[in-house]
Every structure is written in C-alpha cells, then in structure tokens.
Amino acid sequence: MTVWNCNGSLRIDAGYFGDTLKHTDTAMYTETHQCNGSKLLDVHGYRWESVCRPQPRTIGSTRGSGGVAVLYKNELRDRVCVVHKDVDARYMWIRIQKGHRKKLYIAICYFPPAYSRFAPHGESPYSPLYEDILRFCSMGDIILLGDFNARTKNEQTTLFDTSEASYKEISTEEAGLQRQAQDMGEVTSMANTFWRWVAHMD
Image (cartoon, rainbow, N blue to C red):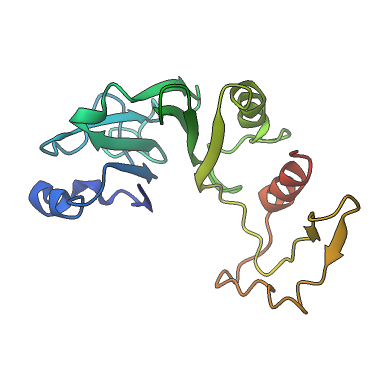
C-alpha cells in the first residue's frame, strides 16, 4: 500500500505509471487535479475509485484542483469498496476486507489550505470527518491518511507514556522527538484547528 500527494502528476505516461506499481496492490493519491467528468489514467490490471470537485480550477479549464483517488488490483475488487465520499470532495472512505470478519476503514484526505477559496470559513473543516470516524470505528479499524494542509511549522505536540494507569507526560526534548519540519511558513488557523481536533480524539 502506498500514498502519494501527486499534485496533478497523474497526467504522466501510462506505461511508466504502471511500472511504478509492480509491487503494489493498492495505491492512494491526493491532489489528483481530476476534473468532473474526466477519467484518470488507464492502468492495466487495476481499477480506480475517486472523488473530485465539481468545478474546475478556473472557468473553461480542463484541470481541476484537490481531489483524492485509490487505485487497486482488479482481483481485489471483492475486498475493496468505497463506503463514503465527502460532498465537498475533501476525502473518501474505503473499506478493505482483511479476513472473514476483520474490516479496515481508510479515509484518503486532501483538505484545501486555509487561503484557498475552497476552504470553509467559520467552521472546522474536520468536523464531518470526525463524525465519520465515530460511525466507522465501531465497525472495524481506522486509518487516516493524506494531506490535511495543517501547517504547523515546528510546533511541538504533547506525548504521554500510557504504559501505566496514570499517564506521564514525556519530554520530547529528552526523548529526542522534537519536530524538525522543513515548512518555514506561518502556522495557519487550520493547524490550530487540527491540533485541537486531534487532542479531542480518543
């Protein structure tokens, strides 16, 4: 399984693209730039599921913005299925049948940056995703992946040792776990929202 923010690079040569998947059963892509009504690359032996914004990047353009997709082998079609697509094309949930009873729910996400015209204002963009998590967590294991555009720069998080009944806070500096992000931009409002959202997840 692989994940790639391809930034619209799915328009490359189909043969080369297929070669990169030789040892991959399932691949997830964010920021596909797929436009409503357009098709993604035809890859022999694989099938696509995707969600994209209904409007193009600019008026009259054939190039979209945002969007997510999953590409998986044909022989997995009975084990992989889409169970939910966000109405604003920010994420898509797929279910993978791991065994007779075990199910894995994966949210493939691409949230637009805070400055984008597609970003919501006055509300948390992650609220609908959180509601989905509450729904799917009772049905199987959950993985969230993709690009949340929560630019946090070198902001530190709080870690706890959960090996005992009473949680003990871990010093990230002493543990050598201080973040060394390459992102030198400003910490955005979406980053603060993301931290609060993660902190309230059980």
